[in-house]
Length: 172
Image 1 (cartoon, rainbow, N blue to C red):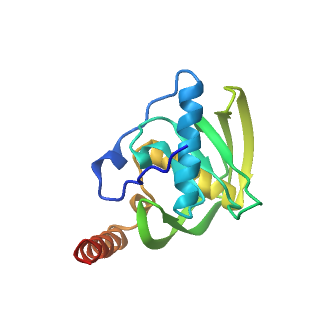
Image 2: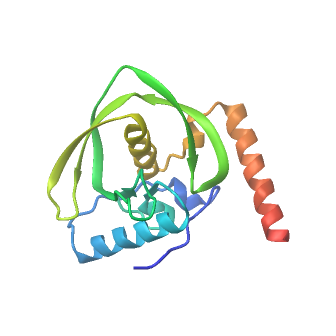
């Protein structure tokens, strides 16, 4: 397992649409293991493969990443098969958009299908943080950042703040 660098906006690779995983094999599982290591090292709760520069439809999450209490989840080729009409607003952040937090409106509940670590089809009903995180990470697979859900003004402000933080980091 290896910790891989996480791409940050405005890296154009984050806008790529990820490709379907044809076969769940040892390479796919090794990618997932690296993704978990990278996510934990960055203190995140979710990560899509594209965020480490791999345009494959793989995402990982752990909504309880504390040591000894980890609940790692792997989703290969996830897709939403149903979403509620009810919407919810949650404050979201992203490892690829560091230090920016904004409210995003999404369906409150979803049903998703995905392949597990062994390539078996699974179905999941999700609400709350699990639903929000899964939708957020699945957006990455389509080249969409949570900033893309914001108004033009809020997105512009967030991107300027991100660029300024990058400049300060590069100088310091």
